[in-house]
Image 1: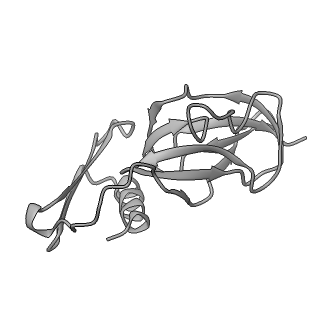
Image 2: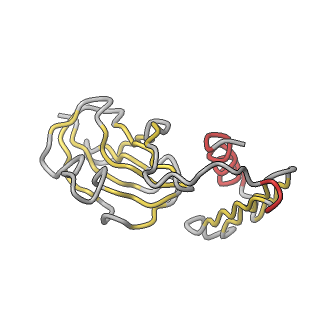
Image 3: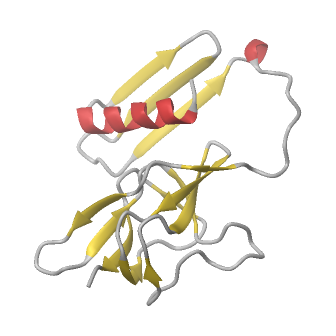
Amino acid sequence: MDIKEIQNLIKFVAKSGASEVKLEMEDIKITIKTGGEDRLKTTTIVQQHPGMVASAPVVQTPSVEAAEPASVNTKEGDNLITVKSPIIGTFYRKPAPDKPTFAEVGQEISEGDVLCVIEAMKLFNEIESDVRGKIVKILVDDSTPVEFDQPLFLVDPS
């Protein structure tokens, strides 16, 4: 089971309203628990059985993979667009601690520009913009956990 399949499973469970889902296969065990009425709390536990772990060497530098484009919703009453997290993970504004940030308040962005990365299960997923405009506000602090569908940026498309 790859990261995309796990992300899709998390999205499906979040939308279904189920409070807990367990999936056990030969080499992996996944438990997804949601807060029921409190949809802000979602916990995903992924375990590999010790006998099934591959004997590949551990890589020190994480790979960067493109995630699905971030969801975009417009707020009623004004023309700002909210860019939301497509996955659960840890939000990072920089590709590495010694590198500049991907996006700043006031910066003009285009479709396809990388806005941040979200680390999920040791994979760094680039979150790209689906809209063109100017970043008005960054709603999440660097190195903090984010939930699926959590607002990350406000963008003025004008």
